Image 1 (cartoon, helix red, strand yellow):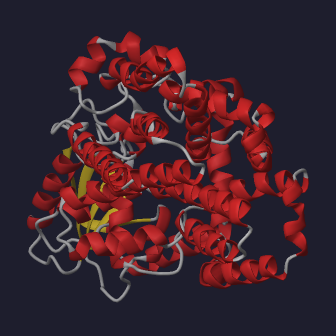
Image 2 (cartoon, helix red, strand yellow):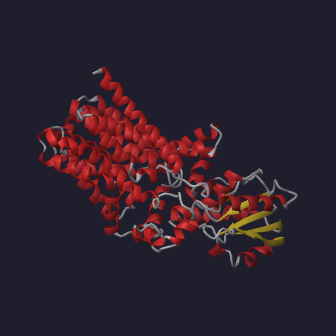
Image 3 (spheres, one colour):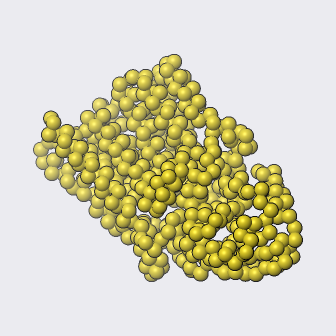
Length: 511
């Protein structure tokens, strides 16, 4: 027994080590951080109980990254860590279901060699979101197995922390409510511990809810903007196709899990998970959610399916099928290695566009196909932009009174991350609208404009300054920021702070 335990833990450790190795090897040095990563990292300098588009948890991790030196190594470490912990939770779920070592290896392989490798390359709330979903489902499994009410309290804490990371976990709750009502677990509504758990969860998320209330619920504005600009372009058929691709190597395990929840007697008490996957996917489809919102739904089913298959293949000649099943997620991962990850140069991708186009990877949020996947294009041009803004900043003698005003949060965040000067770039976009320093009487402005908005900037803004010029632009043709132009305006004729206040008031009133 002791030897078996040691072997099991060694194998688990090897999976976790492999996870970290893969995550650090899947990004080519040609790529920089993603535009969203810069925003999240900047939140470390403006800690609050909420932000325009995300809850506060990511800012806490960003602050830890800042304390650790703010290097790219640590930026990439935490999403890899959350991915590794997802594997750990699936492993523990398999053990709770009395699965053997084969089941654990199969489940870990299906989770490791999946779309999570891509999700975990970026420092965004998504990695912890998947971990949160998996953990909440695992705790539900523990509660069903033991009927120990302490798991309700633990589940409330896990759900609340997941909520403070990404509001997407609300879909989990929406899918679970009718699932509980249709299962024998409906008796949970008669337990006082259930309501204590609800109060505990509410207490944990209350500071964020109060922040939303005091700031006129910016999350609603964000969701409305998201619906109009991005979700409107989402096709429900494409959503379903993506669900198949996310865990393609583990699809047979997920299907086995669904089958087992219907016909496998030992899993009868876990039938709540059968209804959960149905209702949750229906809710996602109804709201035309982004396909990756649902990724956290599947790891627990990989655990269930792995245990079921291990039980069915444990005797006789069927045992020889075990290594074949373990090989499937690995073999199916190999052809995607060159496509799903930013490990190939932009030139390579452009010369092999057909493979990327078949998987819909070239389609951006605008619903159109482009030369590179949007995430990859969002990882280029930022160092160039920052260096050129630094040069523009140095051209002013009065640097303290120079404002760097950008069009979007990616520009502002990247400049603040890479700058070698004392620059605090801002924008009227996203959280930066609350981060303007209006104690400074600005005389000069460095204006960073997106290519599509740059044509009339000089003509419109130069009358308010003594001198103005086009300083430079982003030349990286593969970057989404290609053509972003840097303007310099010196010696203002107006009080810039008043114009900023007016703009902020107009935006907030519109919201």
